[in-house]
Image: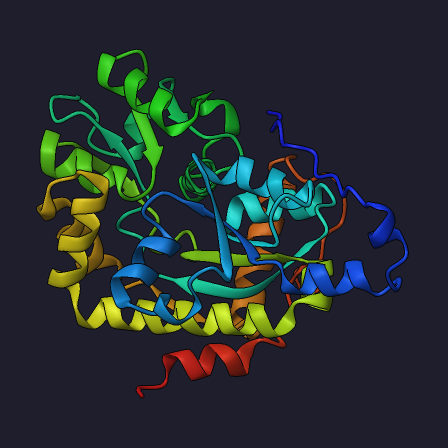
Length: 323
């Protein structure tokens, strides 16, 4: 998959050429923090919680349809930071994307699930042997199927992967072109609430429930105060959302044009929270890396500690502390 990004150019007139050499560095420091997001994710919760009011104009948001193109944008220096699932982050790190995780989110894994239509004969993951499962290549849905195969002591070719972006995966699933869909929220709650879909496998007990706020190495070096402020506000927003689920569900549903019960189900059971990079996060991420290595999807040695940055813990803690 390739991402076509606009080339940035700097046009300098004669007066600018005569300016001190430090000027471009000053201009870069004053530029908005470039934040990648997926629709209905970080920006939605931060706006609902009211934590962006003081920093209008200091963030330039870019929206992506899925995590993979967001990771590509990080690699291409089109954004400074973005929130992605642990699976696409791990694949990006293994491919050499110059970024580290500066914060993590944890949530219950009911909303990471392999779905089948309500009239499907499948009652368990084992019943999908020989069937076609749609998911995103390198996504947390891909991770879930790999983990379920290992947990069930099944070979990797026990199922056929059909790799699609979420919109195409939904279409294939709805039309019956595939037998199951391994996906995440809000798609899981949408299918359950609106179409009666059934989960034959979720992520509880076999996946760690992590996502990462990833930031480019040069942003960590040059824009630390802004990144600290961002993760503090994100933690504050997630804490607010968990204490105000009806209000957040209403705001999110109006933004996404999705029925409110879908949002209420998702938020009630997920209880997403921002956490610092600590020993448990590192252990869980190393488990992800090892899973992909065993599956032959990561072919070079990767250590979790080399792609995680623990130095933002204080900022995250400040966001999680009631004011």
